Length: 468
Image (tube, rainbow, N blue to C red; front, side):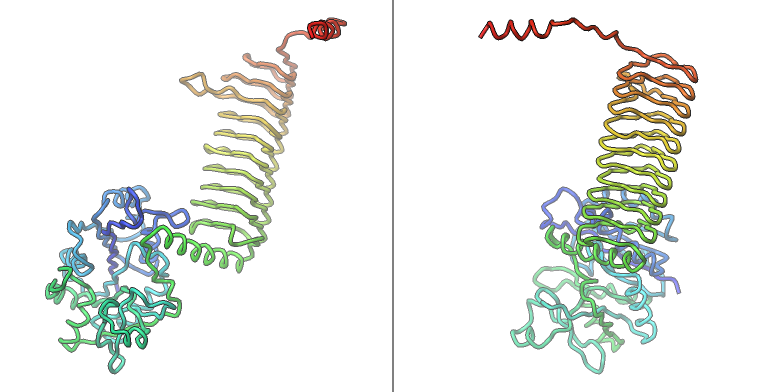
């Protein structure tokens, strides 16, 4: 049966002390709301309705940018102009629900830890028991701030808000309301208009639907989850750090179970879309983001950051940043290399210490060992770039290309001023500034002849001593 998910994301999030929407703050490399939307989509939601308010355009723009609408049959944004409670937020989407009779799940954009399996379990529970509404309940170690559930014949009889609990109720009632609901769509649309705001805050509370259904003698029940952390919300940067640590370990433990080693999993951060092969080792202070793909038998880290990188088998990535680039099998990077801009290092190539490679192709077995910049270039196979060499690819306005053939040796401290081509088997003398094409098999040297003045230095030092 089709499922609709409503994600509430209209809150201002004042405690975040931010110019951005609360739900746009990142957990690992994705905004909080991405995790909720992704869980809903993976749970089978065919229609996702996101209720926005404060900084709503920021949220819309993000989902447009990542083309999330291509992952779900229907994605709808509804504006809640006034934040008048969770019930009011659901009232705002009544028109979008229309005559939908299937399950409607209410989720929160600032609760990113809920899993697709838990959402599916809630929907199945609601359907199997023919409930008008089912709520996820949990027993956290500290119930402060949570509404308490009371039961009668396995049905929820009441939700008592924390501020309304007596001391005795606070002590005795430990089953808490998570705020995550599954409604029967038809009955929700039929009765949502009956919510009132007759309370001190003049807000519409979704919890009031429980009492409303009870008066109508319609079944309302709770599905208890063992891990209360799944429904933790983020209202401050401290809480953001807490849920980040939980998700970090959830991902890392899964990777270790799949054959990835980590010297210290608390010092490795991996995004949800990253794929890593077996027998890889991730060293401390490693960050793997975006759509990074890593083969098998690699060592990544320490102190490395890979974003949208593709890494082959048997690679070493040591203290290196790789962004939007690809390295093939057996490539060695670092320490302290920077690979970016759709660079491609082919099999068994090397980008060594303090090397930056931008938008370039480095051929098989070619080496850029240290202290070099290679930008907008193509190197053939078996090329050696001497330390301190650079391609001068920018004239202040235009980027130009450098072409280097196979089996070329570039001496140290060489400048190759693009556009320039160096043919196969050429040799470039150290400290040369190459501005013209070099034919294949040729030697190119561009530097002044060495001048030696005998005894000049001794005379200079004697002169300085006399001045003292």
